[in-house]
Length: 445
Image 1 (tube, rainbow, N blue to C red):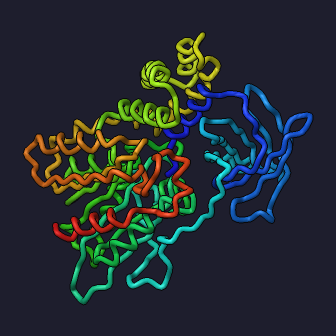
Image 2 (cartoon, one colour):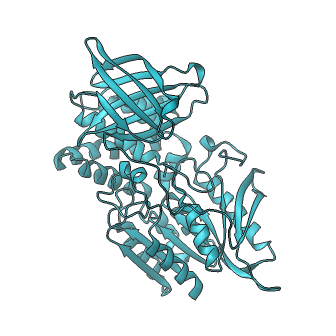
Image 3 (spheres, rainbow, N blue to C red):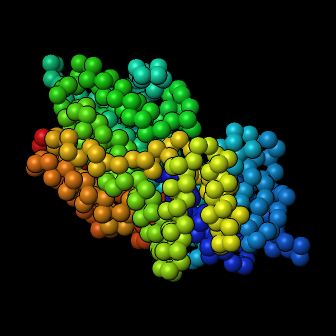
């Protein structure tokens, strides 16, 4: 659910449509709520975790500059530095930086209250075996931690199994975001249908070793290889029926694993099917248009971003990238934002995502493939699902199936607009019909 590209687009939307508006009121978001009041000198207020109003802290060092409100929560070294900026439609985009851990969170705030009710989150006792496990990446020695769910079966009986691959950004084994645990929900459903799953914390997240910020798609690929090897080493698993389910960025990894004959079947959930540079441009355009940005502004902006992506890919270091972006943006409405864009584009994960091109994998994918997409996905357009299917079927593989869900967003929730700020506000974690279709397809293999 955490997605660097979405973060970048949200910031860009704020930059383009920034205008004077009143920040006063109660603003609900995840993980915090902000109660802001206007005074003769500016603004004051409090902030607290969405489910713990008793932990309210005052907002201090409140400043307004270029229609952006910045402040800090008054909690010493454990507080947050906060930046708030208006978007169209009465929504605030919030950037929260933890002053102690340096963790950065991004959230959308609105004045519509909501609660973190998650009816699909599995609750013990379970009708299947749940085991905390760890396994090692043989390439660089990083040890990863995860959860294995095993259906109950009779003696000497093995089962099919899948590895769950998360999207971009540091994700834990449940792919948790906004109190949603989609991978937990998927694992629970599949286990009840007789299918084992292995889900794990990304390197540098939770109990897994490694440094996430230094990882690229190549490291994530070898982590997935290690997970597959671990599954095949378990006596309860049918070693000839092990597949992967890749969500969003994880879809790129799933496709490469299949092309390298590392899996027996694969599923992409809103997976990228076009080159990463194209997916990023599509994503920015879709999010901006859905946020009310005029078409011409979107087109002009994406012309800059296409060049910015090229600069990031061809720069030798961050300093050079920033200097070249400064030259590109000089005199435009984005002038002065080169440092921010450089930090978002010139990092290992984003650079490897921009370099990704699944068209090289399609000729070598001969296993069964299930491609799922949502009509309200603004992060990875359904066009990517079409590209995956046509690309793989061109090699003669007839074991490709595509399912399209018109009302579902990028997280496979039933949505109104598909915009990311809805994710946390929707109670549904993962559409039941998709769970049914997913398990039914795997069981028939």
